[in-house]
Image (cartoon, helix red, strand yellow):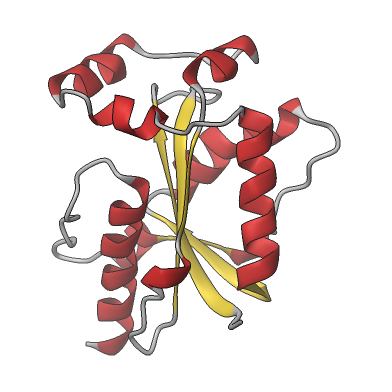
Length: 173
């Protein structure tokens, strides 16, 4: 099994504020030389009712956006697990697939990681973050003229693949 140097983390949510309800986590490992390891991606849906039971909030505008996309958010709920189990699975995936000093990318790490995932980890005293703040990277800091459009809109793995392509393009063009 390979261990990967970098990963894109993408979180689908039901809001835009800190503590908003996550409904799926996706992770896509890659390296800057140009390889995206799609066979090793991670995706887990998070049970909407369980997230709400932990005090996570929703935003009417975001819920409306999901409704405009038909059953897309319901597809993410298929085989969804509790928030705790989703975080445990994500931690296990990170431990298994990522190098100790792996960089964690997102398109706005202050959002996906800071406003959404961190408050979720704070709910459970016995769960540790799989990242260190020094290893967080934000795709937006690359200041690209355009970003890659995902194959499937609002799917955390598809979004992650698109974001990984952008990081690779930045470092290789």
